[in-house]
Length: 321
Image 1: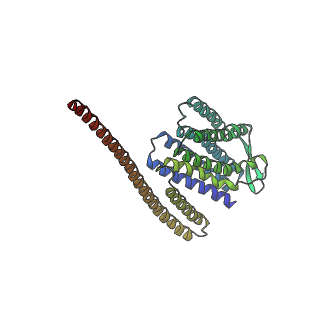
Image 2: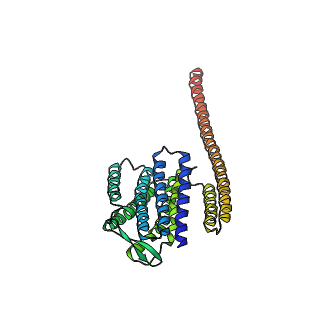
Image 3: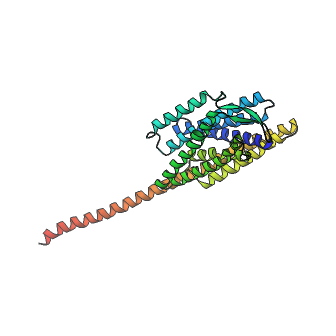
């Protein structure tokens, strides 16, 4: 049980941190706002997930299950909208986007009713596992599965149409989404009495990471930036787990201090790498512009030489005659 609680805490921490980083970059762009919508939904879902597994009575567990279902309700729609903006299809499909938001709003209205979540019951190692209501089946099929797979179809089509570097960006987004879906989908089997436990829950963090990298692009997927960020996040998560595993308050305070220290220097390292990559990209762009300008000068010299030759010929011919 502790593993599932830790996975929820880690998901909330990573998503919240990425949301903070993206918000610092630019919170006014539509794609960034939609990403923040995804992050808020993931954090809301993860914290409610944690509280649900920590509940000691059925009524409290049911309350938190209904809250986490609200988070899981809005994750697919924000993700779908984000994909349409990323692929520049949001204007073309604006009427469909409005329709989906309307449907999600209807589900939201019934989220605290027995039509959506019928109740909770003991199941395997879980004291209070949720029982789906009739509307939950429609949500799972048309909102969660439907929107995610429709988004993947759109991304796949755009992958075939686009050239580098956007083609690589789409490829990594598809990969991150598939990994997260594979992990997140393990939460649904026990709802339908299939004995598969949600061990893949921790993989939900992968697709916010992938989307954040796409948004924070320094020529998007620079491998040095990705490696630095993933390594830093891994260290943060490892230290965060130690905070929750501490047995005494003294040990916990020490671990919290260490965690704050690691986060601070991790941010400095990431910023340093981003700055270095940014400067290299600027120098590369400048070099390419200078090369283009040099080619134009060479062409102008050739045109000038040709013009001199033509004018000289036109003058010498009459004089010779």
